[in-house]
Length: 314
Ligand code: TXA
Ligand code: MG
Image (cartoon, rainbow, N blue to C red; front, side, top):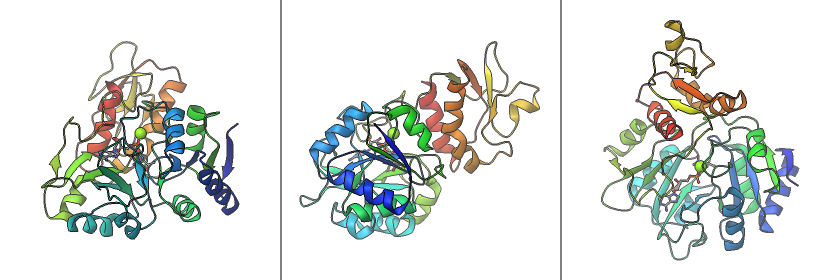
């Protein structure tokens, strides 16, 4: 049985207790809901991979409450510390060489010598980390390969019966996963675009980010991630037969095309990011088999939105 509780302090205490005994708890973050387990426990982490149906070669992000806690897990070079000071708590994940004395177990790191770290900007997530008293690994709380959850109900529909508890903290505000930046070689490298725009990171670094591409660096970034059942056709300005319209800024509507949903009628990327996963799930809920998606600009949050749509379409 999976319990669903509003994220009161009593519920957070209970969640911390479940984590201490090796159980699995879904909790809200500012990006998407995460599925948490004790980062130090190979047993709990194995259960987490199994509950999600996630391949064990895809490492997890460890959630901590402070930069100090991050420095106990990894060797963060000065520019990484600068990003942490600028963007934490917030939707930025830093990948860096793991310290031998760190707490994140090898299974959670998928055997890699590096570790992914982030301080989430959500009061429930932070309170849970504090109450638990250690690092919590948390992938998005969806079935592996499916669309990430932005509500407790999404988590329930993907993982009911597989996990112990879901803390309900309402809808996740950003709606897109964290941006992942690696500090492993000479240059800071963008592993995954996300809710912190690349431009803001490059400005803070005073340098362009290197591009990872589809390399071994980002083992989780396989195509056909984030996929709804509906087939998507991107950058569409007209509908083909049998397609529903997923609009942005009213572009399809302005051409007289029928529109099922609009990511942001006013053409606002922040709103589109917040709506993206809920709209993809809504297409499936309405039994829509094929959708044409209006063009979305590639700057700012648009880079991550386009990345997720490309993966959802493949
Ligand atoms: O916003 C987020 O980041 C959410 C919330 C819950 O915090 N979490 C999330 O986790 O998106 P997940 O598991 O869905 O994505 C984690 C990504 C994967 O693509 C994984 O390959 C990558 O992080 N990753 C983790 N550790 C890594 C490492 N050591 N090197 C390279 N990539 C790593
Ligand atoms: Mg995920």
